[in-house]
Length: 264
View 1 (cartoon, rainbow, N blue to C red):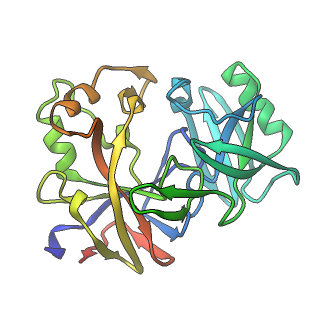
View 2 (view 1 turned 120 degrees about the vertical axis):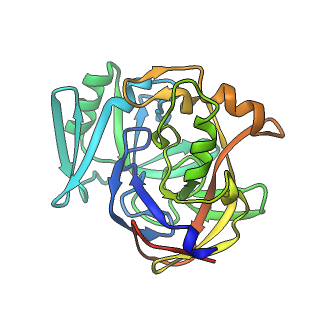
């Protein structure tokens, strides 16, 4: 079984709800991959901003190089140091979880405000424990970055292929914003994984991931479509939740790479 499952793609999303970065390898940490969703945009009322309400956020493209995070929007580019932040702590909510964050700097917040068309701030979570997420299913609390609920999302290639067989307009895995994409043998077999190892890192499966309207946002152009949620709801609706991919946590830190085998 282990030889079937190989890491095909790795993604991080440095700023919540902006475009992701494809990586050949990444460092797994308790809160998620290093630099994954450590930053987030908030509005004037300190409420988180996502593509659900602002689809244009998918058109902001981050890159990380030489200790700096740059963001490109249309023909405009802005960058700041990964370690940069102001000192004053802010309390924000990521869904029902209270999170302590700090603003990166005023210039960066002004740049995003200009291009989004309303006042906002770019904030950063600094350390483990500044945001805790309680799993109602497991009655367990996890340290998470600024991701919706869990540190990692894993998807098998057959799950996407099975869906695309049913779609007139085929889609890519980017609709689902995974962290780890693995080759698989059967659609949605990742739902039933328990614990497994990739590279240096032991992972534990928490639960299949319930999907929202955001998967209908085409990341290529920011336009809202009817698919794939419409089709998925016909065969992946469990207790009024449409499932695709599975939420996992890491049990230790370490490097994983494209090409690594999944060992059960």
